[in-house]
Each structure stands twice: as structure tokens, then as C-alpha cells.
Image (cartoon, rainbow, N blue to C red; front, side, top):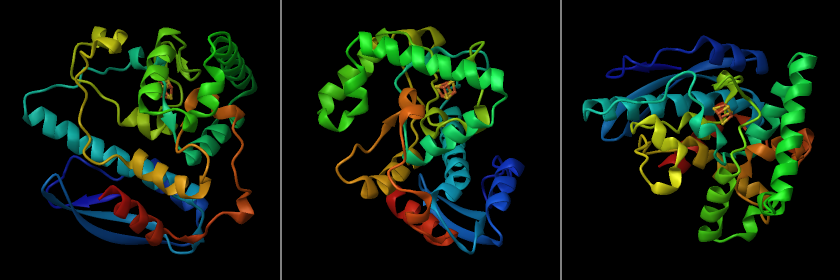
Length: 267
Ligand code: SF4
């Protein structure tokens, strides 16, 4: 992705380009103009021209997330705030992380491609977490969050945090899958003191406000398909979830149409 005009802080991401090229036979650079936070921006994005599934577009959605978060960080810095999140701080990685169906499939692939020893360790951590959640009577609630109202979901998040279950991908207080981390993780940055992240129930967390969340837009995209099922899935149950539709039945459309759908949901 390349951004023209007034946003020199966003640079093309080689890994992203690589991911798109590896999944698509034909890719064309496409310019998209939009206004974000009152600021006009033009994104130059490589997009697959052939019909692809939404999974193929995940690198774009991740990159769009990074871009919007970077814009939000710049705005916060202009207002005199400073992001306090640092490498080696995983205080927020015991929170309940909502992920999209696309990310479930992606994370499964990431785990499948890990060296065997690491893969075994990660599977063990997921299993141990499920046992802890079952013992605390939270497992079934997490499997069916669509049965909960807003207050119950908030309580679920707080109860979950109380269990202090580190994300299975957290190693030495750092994210072991950083380039693949969910969009919700990318969108979570704070400017308040790091110690406040250990007590989120006190409401002393000052988060970076991302005006348009790609994670939410992608959730809306997959929610349409899932109908009666929940609009989000917890990261901690990612490996036990099975995609609703086989790959050969998934919607196919050119990259530009996926981008238009996401931008429509973002606005
Ligand atoms: S995926 Fe990475 S950033 Fe997200 S909660 Fe897990 S360890 Fe933290």
C-alpha cells in the first residue's frame, strides 16, 4: 500500500505486497481517495484483479488497519499524547480478544506452519486455557456470545480478564505472531500508564481512538454470512472453531469489490 499526499508516515509494506502476490495471479495498482478524520488521503493499493475469496484479502484489511491506527497515533501525538505500549509489555494480552472468521482461518494456518515444538506448545496453551475457562463456567458463554446482551458481554470480558489467562501466542511478554496478530490487537494502543492495563475494570485506560475500525467492518462482512451465529469469535477459542463454509462455496469477487465493500462499511 502506498499513500500519496499528506501522509508520509505510511510506507509500502513489503510483506503485505508479498502476501497478496503469493495468493493472486494478477495484481493491479489501484488508487482510492477518501477522507479520514477530515483529512483527504489517496491510497495506492495493489489489488488482485481475478475473483478471490475474502481470506485472500486479509493482508489488505490488516494493512488498512495499520494505516488507520498510524493516523490515529499521529493525531494523538499532535494533541501531546504518547503511546505507552512497548515491545516486551503484554499487559493487555490477557484480555478477551474478539477476532473475525477470516482471522480464525489465518491463525490456524499460522499455527500449522510453526515448527513442531512451538506448535505443540501453542496447542497445549490453548487446551489449558479451555480447561480454565470451563472450570470458571465461561467456556460455553464464549462459544455462544450471540446469546448474551451487551451488559453480559461486558461482564464476560471482565470475568475473563480476572482469570489472567495469557494469550497462547504471548512469549516472554511479546507477541510471537506479531505480523499475523488480529486486527483487534493492532487497534488497541494506550497512552495511559502501562500499570493501568492490569486493572481495566477501574476505567483508567486512555486508549488511542481509532475512528474507523477495520476489524468491525470485516466482522460486519462475515456476519452477513453467519446469520444466526455470533458476529465475533474469541481468539482463545480460535483453534476449536471450524469455518462455516468450505473454501469452494465461499464468495468470490475481484479485489476492488472487496475493498469497496469494506470502505462502505467503514463509512
Ligand atoms: S495475538 Fe499477540 S498481540 Fe494479540 S493478544 Fe495474543 S500475544 Fe497479544
